[in-house]
Every structure is written in structure tokens, then in C-alpha cells.
Amino acid sequence: MRPVNIYNKRNKMAVNVDIVYKTVLLILNKEQRGNLSPDEFNKVATQVQLEIFESYFETLNQQVRRPDNDTEYSDRVKNVDQDISIFKEYGNATYVGGGGYFTLPTTSGAGVATQTLTGNGTSISFPFTSITSSQLASSVIAVTINGVSTTAFTISGSNIIFNSIPANAAAIVVTATPEDFYRLGTVIYQDSKEVQLTQRNELLYLNSTPLLAPTTTYPIYLYENSKLYLYPQTITSDITISYLRKPMDVIWNFTIPSGQNYYQYNPTNSVNFELSKTEQSNIILKVLLYSGVVIRDPSIIQVASRQVQQEQLNSKQ
Image (tube, rainbow, N blue to C red; front, side, top):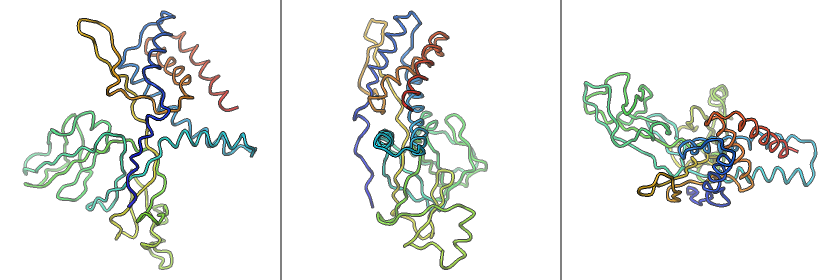
């Protein structure tokens, strides 16, 4: 099976989070427009990065549809594809026996969190002790009872509440997988066979037609609710996929020196933007745009909006 791609592309040509934050603060302070706290900046910066990341796909579609077919056109497509390629990964899908499907891999750097519970025959609510609230909020939650997958539950705060009482001594396993998966690419079986996508309305016809029925030589899959269903259903392992992950959250980490009242940048546990350095000015403009909202200054919104719109117009010409 193809190994998980562990080549770390995230620091290559990344936009430095400290440079962006200090530039934004310099502009805001120079214009006496207020301030932007580290927590506010981290939220805004993460949103800005996600917006730019998602804009790549619209840009790529526009460039591909252009009628011209010259070197300049090819370079534009190539450049956008290179921007997206930073987020391309390979991973091994995991089979869930009770549900008959494969779960998607994760490469966010955050580990998959699990907790094992035991039914007592009387309770429907169980507290989480090894899965944190932040993990619950940013993960896909999967639950099995005695090895059988179930969706008959809700998450409330730091508790899982089942729709009915699990049996006494029932083995309950809760898995929280970081939700960094963005878009599915190619599904590969046994590292050599590309699995073909099918739709639910086609599956019955294919399975009922001997000449078209899926085989281990020519397998097919359904992709529904972030799960992969492989056919024939005898396939329970050796599935690798290529996919695009989401950008990691941007973090400007800091310490407060003893006896002081200012934030000091701490590169430890800080996370840079994962975008190309060519996006640095665009990032700063967009952060300023959102900063105007945070500090309730409409003049910043107007100026930043015009500059961002001009930047976008230039990039499409």
C-alpha cells in the first residue's frame, strides 16, 4: 500500500505570520485606527487564508475555460495548480467493519483522538475524558457499539448522549478525526488499480448486470457523507486516496514578559500561512479588511475593499 505522504510542504515558501501581524498593526497604529488582539488576528487570518485557498478553484476554472491557448495561458494555469499542489496529500483509508465503509485520512498534524466507554444498562449520557472540547468541535465523530457503527447519538458539551440506552457491558468506541479533508481526488486499490466513482442511482443497475458488475479488478465506489463505500464489498483493505486537505489554522503565538503588559511573539507553536509568498500583500489587505469590522472602523473597510478588489482584478487580467 502506498505510504502516507509525510513530506512537509507547509513551511516551504510560507508567508510568515509574524510579518503579517506586525505589518497590520503598524498600519492600524499609524492611522490611529485601533488595535487587533492576537486572538482576533488568529481568527481573522485563518478565515482569510481559507478564502484565498478556496478562490484558487474558481480561478482555475476560469483560466481553463479561456479560449486562448498560448504560453501565458499555460503559465497561469500552472501557477494556480502549483498554489493548490501544496495541499495535495496521499493517505490510507480505514475500513469500518460494522458500517461497511472506509473513513477518510487526516494529515492536519492533530492526532485522531479515541475514547473507550462501557455501557452500564442504565445511562444514555457519558462524559468525555480523553477527547477535548476543541477536538470535538473540529473533528468528524464516529461511534461504534460492540463493533457496529451507529449514528444514533448527539454531542452536547463534553458529553455523548445516545438515543437509547446501550446494553450493559457494551463496548463503545468514540473516534474524533480532525476535519482537514477538503476534496477527494483519486481512489486507488492495492496501489495499482484506480477505483471508478459511481452514483447511487447507477449502483443497482451495475450490480444487477453481470457484464458490468464491479470486481476486484475493476472496482467502483460511492462517496457519500464523507464515507467511501467500495464494491465489490469483499474489499476491506488496501485503499489509498489522493486528496486536498484544508489549510491549517493560522496561529500567532505569544508570551507576556513578566511584569509587562505587551505581547511578545513566540515562534514555538506558531503556525505560518501555508500560502505562497506571492500572496503576502493580498493577505495583509484582506486582514485589514476584516480588521475594520473587528474594530468597527468603516473607513478601513472602504479602503481595504478597494485595494482588495483591485488586487483581484489584476490577478484575473
